[in-house]
Image: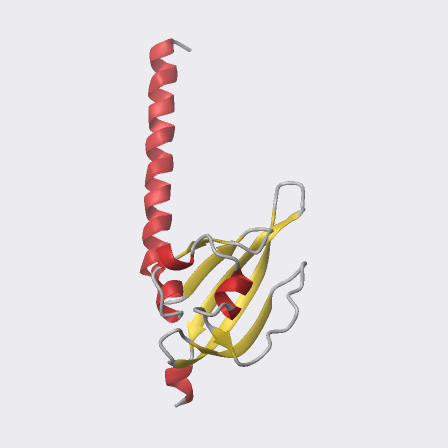
Length: 137
C-alpha cells in the first residue's frame, strides 16, 4: 500500500467517524428522554439537554458534579422518595418525586444501567429519566 493510499484510507475513516459522531450527537440531543452518564466515582460526565431540562437546569450547571451533591445539595434537587439500591450487574427502574431548585414538584421515572469497560469492570452507569408528572395528573 502506498503512502497516498494510506492517507486516503485514514481520511475516509476520519470522515466516517465524524459522521457517526454527528449522528449520535443529533440522536442524543433530539430525544425527549433525559440521558445522563455517570463515571465510577458517581460524577455526571454527560447529559443531554432533556436530562438537564427535566432537572430544571442547564447541562453546564450539572455536568462535572457528583450525583449525591446534585440530588441532595442545598441548591440541588430534593428527592422525596428513596431510590432502590442500584445493582452493579443489571438495570434498575424506579419512580421518584423530586423538587427542583425552583420549587416545582416532578414525578420522574428513572432507569439506571451499569456500564462496563472492555475487561468487564464496572465503570459507572447510564441513566434514562422521563418526567411522568403530566401522565399522573
